[in-house]
Picture (tube, rainbow, N blue to C red):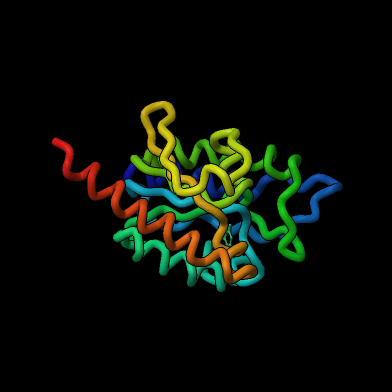
Amino acid sequence: MTDKTAEIRKLNLEYSRLPRGRNWTLSDRFVPGEGPVDAKVMIIGQAPGRNEDVQKRPFIGASGKFLDRLILLAGLDRKQIYVCSVVQFFPPKNRVPTKDEVSLCRRFLFRQIEIINPRLVILLGAVACKTVLDMEEVSKIRGSMVRKDGRAYFLSMHPAAAVRIRSKMPLMEDDFRKLRLIIKSADRKP
Ligand code: URA
């Protein structure tokens, strides 16, 4: 077992056993991040949905299917990407995780980023952009690349929003086509 595999296992064990306080209303089931521990690209969503909660796998429901399409548009391969969410327990009725829930989970997210150490992090939606980069108003900054502490971050909307409001799908598709071009031009640089 590699060091990274052991570290991620340890983190998942700790995260899944996060003490549930009296006010805990998230699902009891933990949805671990998925993908190779040496992935160069990491995708971070908001929180698992009902299907993810049942199967304990991230992005396997309707928004996951759309995400698969976006990944292809970017010229990437999901099998080589580490996929997770800011909060890795299903919030009932698919509600947005509360500030308290995010602050309970963020340290685990930051450890995951540190362990995986990807070159590129794709942030999907307001919760991910706010938690990781403290950036708001995703609609204004979507489709852009931000560099911080030697890492590249690509910002887009959350696929669940596009699945709910279909007119947003082409916007996300444009973001990921743009990402393809950014990746291509970065690969061409000596
Ligand atoms: N949305 C997320 O943010 N994460 C999932 O795993 C599924 C949907």
